[in-house]
Length: 101
Image 1 (cartoon, one colour):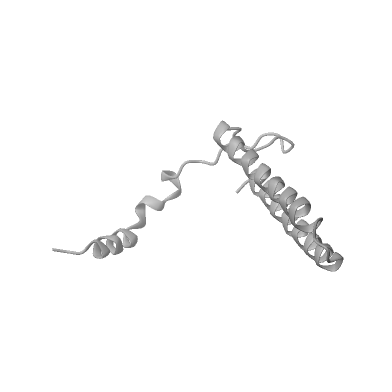
Image 2: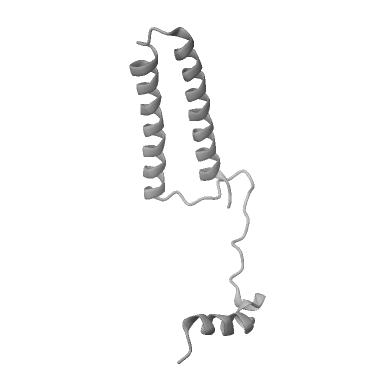
């Protein structure tokens, strides 16, 4: 009896299924100013939850941890660092949501 790995190697050697006529054509491109993604409700809800969680973390770090701290240098350094990383996270998430893969 041959192993599944042997079967996979045979399929890779016979790559007739990879011919262009067997592939689906890409969807037609419309106006470049329109958004490319499908506005599905699950994706929108997940995106909103992600942004709300980042903004809640921003609130907690600034108003609960940094403002009550007595050391100004500690608060300033960590505030700048956290705000910079939060901005980069939100910018990356927005870019991932709105960019054609």
